[in-house]
Image 1: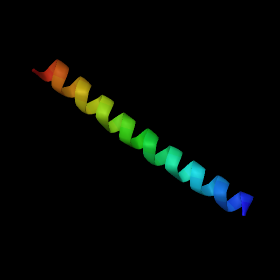
Image 2: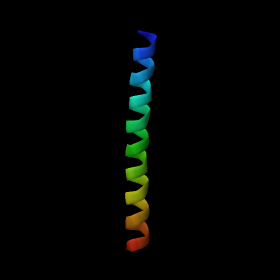
Image 3: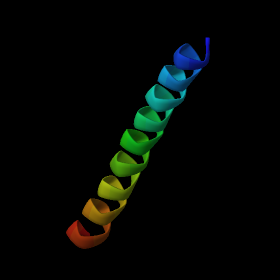
Length: 34
């Protein structure tokens, strides 16, 4: 059960990191493009 919980935590961390990267990339893109 502990291993399953660790897998879920890793999955959520990856999703959160991907979301943050998209937001930062979009912010920088609009900032420098405008």
